[in-house]
Length: 164
Length: 428
Image 1 (cartoon, rainbow over the protein chains, first blue to last red):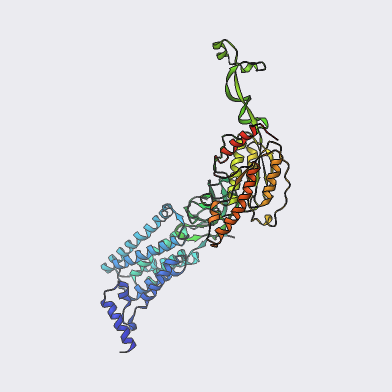
Image 2: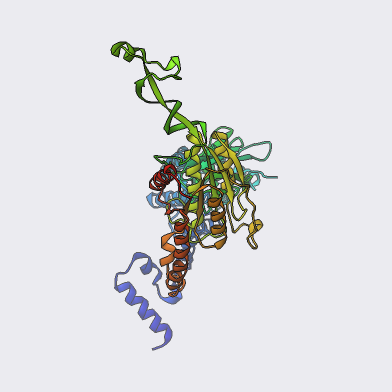
């Protein structure tokens, strides 16, 4: 038995053992492993340990990349769940990155973030709903939609330029 | 110059909002769902960006510049910069101060131009302490923008070695004047009523008790005890600091005991109107000449906080100190661990000069049993204590009592015995 066969047999045993979902996900044949998941597993602890660093961005980017490469393009509950999870991760990292872990902080600090966080969360659901409705109704592309998309693109570029 | 800078969080929100562009380019509406919340947060963070004209102004102040041991005060860190959503203050830990939160780091919500962060600190040991500068960081809403680390100025805090109130029933064995406030055993002019007795020639008319006189048919006067004062000389021995000091709630070194005892005794006698003088055999503590009143207590406490034999200025061999001679009848309270012969010489001269001397033994008992550094240490201490016992015996032969410090009431019995002794007829 070759080394590759031995590794694959071990991974198959891991799958058969009904281990944790994450391990099952990783435990594909060695030549067909999901690199995105592997890297994500490494980056997530970094993001937790160093929230005020590029690590959370790396984690979010990997998730988006994984979604882009594998997931269906239709908006639905799965994408809403992923978007809300990323939102929570972003806010948690932003909050935790402001002060040392052993700081004495009160709920008042967190409550001030509530309006923005709620708005972002609600918007996620609304956008997903609108996307589903529009996709189901078979609306054709139009000049208005293109112009709106271009305006949105300009706004994002402006934002990037301002915050840099 | 300190400015508000975008954080990783704002950069992350903006970058992930860029997925919206990607969504348009690759025609993926699901990516719009992923990017939309980050777009909202990026815009929200940008709109809440503080636009302060200059760097933030930070100050560190204390409610009280002087503390008693075990007393707490509130340190206030003021952060002035419009737009701060939260302010993080980190107060570095100091050995003799305890913060209300173990890390000394506090986060408070902002809003408005001035944010005040209060951190309670408790003084654990007497002394002149320098609090290190606090570090302050301001952050905008959603942690989108943040200031650089701003450092406040340091803060000097003085902790006076006063906690337990010392009390003695019979304060001084030989009163020297008639101006004090506490009760004498001798009748005379004063405010404390001693009793009612028959009128004698020489009594003042204002002392006549008319009610008793009318009832008995003969003149009676209200007699009083004399108010008196005397000089109390606190002779501190700071040559050695034996034992470990761990603050007001822990173990005390010999110097801790001596300084706290001196402060307590001074406070007691000054409260009763006596005059108190302080000097140090090792000349580390600045001598304070005889005086009375609350201002004088402050002078003594200010002097006591400098009692640190390990301070750079106080190193080197013990200097020979010439004390101003004591007045006859002065009550001398010597506070010493009795480990050096020089103090014994001072005590002998004072006794021969007519002073009443009481020695307070400040050697901590635990130190003689501590075998943590070497198992031979307790044995060495036993030998040293045997030598010391012979010194104590010699002091006893001179009529000088040696008492360990046990807080309030330590000197009661001793002073009572000394008073009896001084009141008795003398044979020379």
